[in-house]
Image (tube, rainbow, N blue to C red; front, top):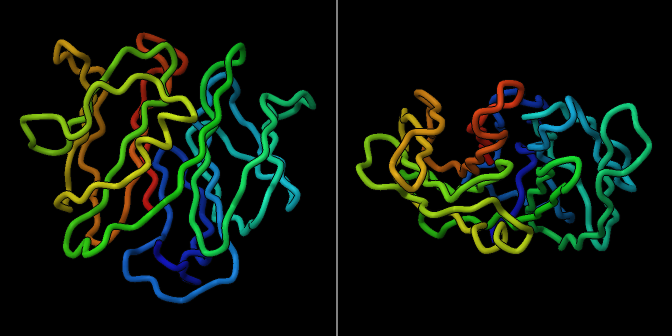
Length: 227
């Protein structure tokens, strides 16, 4: 597991419509805590907030938090902004010097929560690290095509559960550069695209599909967190 960098904590700007943060592969400074990045892919509220024992973290839909320093067993509750009824309430375990991402998604009737451990790839080199999570509502199995590839890098992904998100938490190394992302269904029909995103050498990216197919208010959307 890669040690954590103070430079990461200097990146305090929340990205809306483009998830982005600051963790690079060559970080070396050790901090005596773990950290969590909180990500909002829950379309049934315009804004939510995470509540932890270190305070509250407000997040509009399609946005993420700066790194939050946490360690040990921690209670996390999620609320729609302006309400006092929890969408969900759970306890997580955060280990020293480990990096995690947490995701709220699903619907008001069936909210979902997932947490991944963010592990680096040995000898990533000039490449970028990629992983993909399907957080869309009522989703069929989908595929993600990166750049000019003729075959999908990630295939047959149904909507995640907590368990499948963990199963899909590993990053894979691929070439960096300016590339378009495309989501397709089992028949090869394009469901969503994201044009010309610049993937930087030595960085890690979580790519997520959120929203709902054919929904005018919250259509399918490809979000990106740069770790």
